[in-house]
Amino acid sequence: MGCGNMFFTALISFSVALITYNILIAANAPLKQDLPGPSTLSSIDPIIRMPKDRSRKFGASSSTTQKRLFHTAVTASDSVYNTWQCRVMYYWFKKFRDGPNSDMGGFTRILHSGKPDEFMDEIPTFVAQPLPSGMDQGYIVLNRPWAFVQWLEKADIKEDYILMAEPDHVIVKPIPNLSRDGLGAAFPFFYIEPKKYETVLRKYFPEEKGPVTNIDPIGNSPVIIGKESLKKIAPTWMNVSLSMKKDPETDKAFGWVLEMYAYAVSSALHGVGNILYKDFMLQPPWDTEIGMKFIIHYTYGCDYDMQGKLTYGKIGEWRFDKRSYTTVPPPRNLPMPPPGVPESVVTLVKMVNEATANIPNWDS
Image: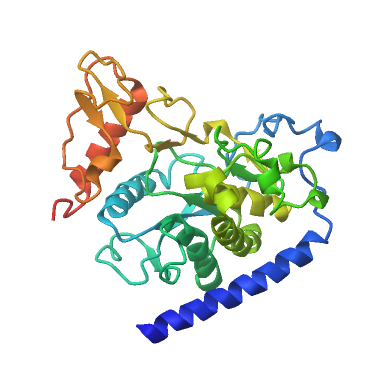
């Protein structure tokens, strides 16, 4: 074990040194001039960077349109908490993969526990090594960019695009390739505010790179991006994440979303802009309708009284919260919410129940 830890510590140290060198070189090189700006206003909305020409549906295929398949990748630990979410997520991925307008290709759970688990046959899995003990400083999310670096280097990925997703995502309809014209497609998070933290971010995104607003208000997930672009971004994302965590000011400013800022910065450093696609996903209970959304992200707890009134911040008479199932998976046939609860929450529980009813050995 000691030799193994020394090996991975040395590997990380070498990687960080090499990546830091590359960032310094990149900082003095001109960025690609293909980001949305005044010269491209005819085709790009400067506020949300959404292509205005939507006469052709994203991902729509015909005899003259070649499908642009993307590979879905989900990073996870081997905890009970992450595992049951991945099983539900993969169930729905399979249900919608071959649906109308889908550009969904292969699927990989990137397991950063360093060893296989009992679900390798159920879910296509790549085993990545975790960071050396103590390097994540208790912030386990730092294993995510390091896991992506390993996967992108070693795996045989057939598709030209990658969808970075998370265990607590439930796909609600077939997903087309939302990226285009060299841009990634990403969900905008209201709490990622580059302008607000400009002073902190300038440590990692120097002024010669342009205005801090070149940093998109995104995390790494959900994002659809070209595979070759992600191969360039991932090592920088790893390095910036580690650097941010080591800096007390940055760590305090960003807290649990630090790794999200690190991805946004790294994408900007490499000149990869993003279409900010608000319909990429919804987050109940705040988003109440499915509408045109593709993914339910059940990161927030859903608490209601028996009259269907939201009691957020207070445990409800009816509730669904993923944190209730950190050590055991949710049972089959969860009780449905009371009348009056929004469509998004009802749909989420129905989909969890369908998955658990059909996944073999769910209770074992």
